Length: 222
Image 1 (tube, rainbow, N blue to C red):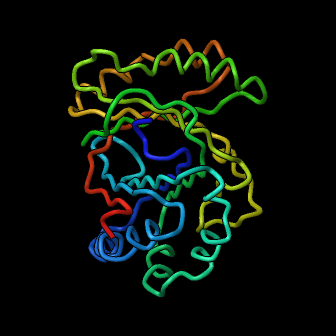
Image 2 (cartoon, rainbow, N blue to C red; image 1 turned 45 degrees about the horizontal axis):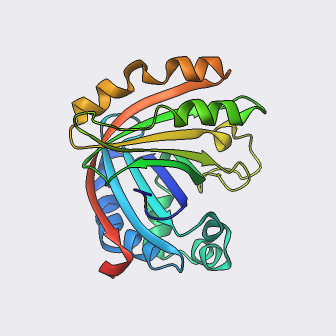
């Protein structure tokens, strides 16, 4: 598949301007490498919003979904550095999805990323999955490289900064990822392409956004 691995951790957040420099330094000099070093993690990518919210987005690929429920990953979460604790405590509007990659089509990963957030209906996920699958072939679309479907696991998808017992309807959301070379081409593709499939399945489109790649880190880079 174009995405390395079958599991995906997605995190996104805002950060106050006064802390942004330290946040970016922490992410670039410590956090990404720490996560990629966990057994079963394959690569990680950082993005900043072009037209999206929250402002920052991270994608962490794993060999399979079980890595995201492994002892090694839980140990890493339980043993954050002081620098990590400080920055995590500053997150605002955090989204965290622990997900399976159920569809991945095309070739390669681009500097532009489109992200659609979809809330599936209670039950009846298969019709929505198949309808989306049919729309995820990049074919010969200019500026589009690959497209993917992430399906969140409701049990594991909890923001690190919130009360774990609080209601969290976002925990079961799905995400369509569109990798491209041109953010305008990505934005045009998202505009209406999935609306009919989402409506027909009784699902809800929550948000659409575009991001640009800051950098990526593979296990082989460590």
